[in-house]
Image (cartoon, rainbow, N blue to C red; front, top):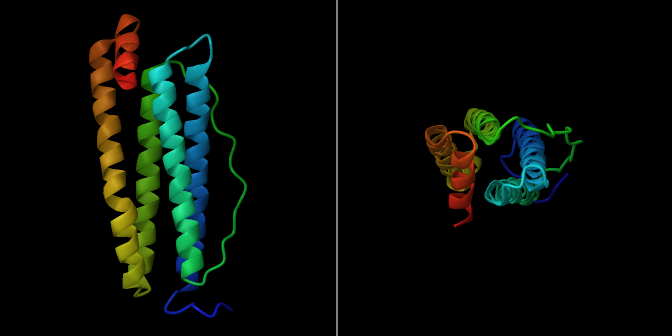
Length: 168
């Protein structure tokens, strides 16, 4: 048993471990998207850079949760990462998949917050609110805006110009 563990329920520890797995899975999905857009037959560098940055952010979230779990006296359990999708029919499909993914991550964080609240852990609820919840809402809005604008642009030259705007 950890010496620093105090007011930290097993259910919260399990929830954080599940969230770590989800963040690492999300990172792998974004890494797969970045690799797809970097392919020579796709060649959309703006999308590649956007999804590469997204992959790094999700991995950073996992790292923050690992540090937090250790700080609270929990035990980190890294689970296997699921193999992500490898190809997309369009940039729009990739953005829609990314929005669905962000909504899933957000839903998981909200459940984790509820778990902390149910276990009377105000320190954990404060941590989740300060580190993750606002950022999730911002990410969902950004992706929704990108989807709306990409739909306005259309395929072909529109996607090319949209991609260029991501690079600037």
